[in-house]
Amino acid sequence: MTTEWMDKESKYYMFVVRRQPVVIARGEGTRVWDVEDKEYLDFTSGWAVNNVGHANSVVADAIAKQARTLLQTSNQFYTIPQLQLAEILVENSALDKVFFCNSGAEANEGAMKLARRYGAQKRNGAFEIVTALNSFHGRTMANVSATGQPHYQELFQPIPPGFSHVPFDDIEALKGAITDRTVAVMLEPVQAEGGVNIPSEGYLQNVRDFCDENELLLIFDEVQTGIGRLGTLFGYQSFGVEPDIMTLAKGLGGGVPIGAFMATDEAMAFQPGDHGSTFGGNALTCAAAYASTKFILDNDVVDNAATVGAYLGQGLNDLMSRYDFITEVRGMGCLWAMLFDSDITPAVVGACNDAGILLNPLRPNAVRLMPPLTVTKEEIDEALERLETGIKVATA
Ligand SMILES: *Cc1c(COP(=O)(O)O)cnc(C)c1O
Image (spheres, rainbow, N blue to C red):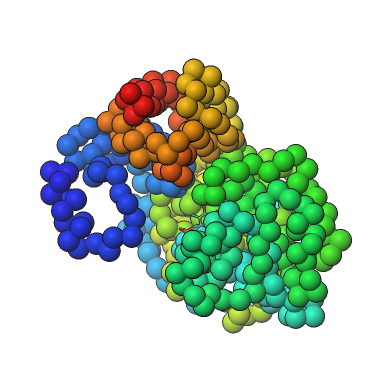
């Protein structure tokens, strides 16, 4: 059965992502089952999306109820789920206003457009945005420019101008890159796709201070770090540094596609007509995101992500102490990377599939682990056993 679906994929689907040979049919909590009914612990979570677990019944009920009530109206009118979601996000963050869209890339596009309006109105037409090397901001044209990885840019020349890149975690490089055309600095608090790179103590605070001294907006791309992933509701809270603009997506909707960007009142430079979206803030996605976010807040899911995530980190470090070919383990909350001394990622991911744990291939020599934030200690124990089985087979 698996091969039949794989054949259909190669016949009909654009080949842009190398997939694992696993056809996932259903999920529940931290687990998924394939079409042959093999069970896996899912440490990919749909790329850090399924923060409340697969088939979460609270979210599923909210979606079903909303689908039978009202799906879509457009932003020509008010709808209740959108405003409930707006309230819960604003009241639980340091930002004052929100706009909803449909993906992380779209959230970043909105944030960058907002920064340009701010520059036009308050900074003499400044428009340039400084981002970090090894960042990942999405796949639209402006995000390809923003993303500080040449291999995403080379194929799509000419890419939109208005960006410059500096090494992450290097405050002096940032200071050297600012001109009078610079309006904003955009960073992931922890670089996720770029390798789970955690900034050194004080770096983000130094960036904040520098932005304040130079009237620059600080944009945090929290598409992956937001909504509990790092063990705080928003990643910026892990570092005690508040952004002027923040973007969200991945974990926001409990599995449905929704993105958001948020801004302080000071940074909210849009006038009516400056931005919009047909589907953005639609009643269905907002009802799902509201149910998911409320579930996270009501059930201390963020604390679970911190404590059970730390337990996962300990387990990974324990593996590293027992296997020489594991060279580094880094992460926080429920976002971890494990690095190897050679390019064994394909072998590790394949053997781990067989052993019943799904991993994300991050680099030829690194895998990423990002379980749902509702993962239990017992599931971590089981995952570590399966992971050890997988890496033993891969290196035998
Ligand atoms: C995934 C990701 C994006 C892009 O989100 P899409 O929903 O795929 O457009 C942007 N920024 C970060 C930090 C991400 O991890």
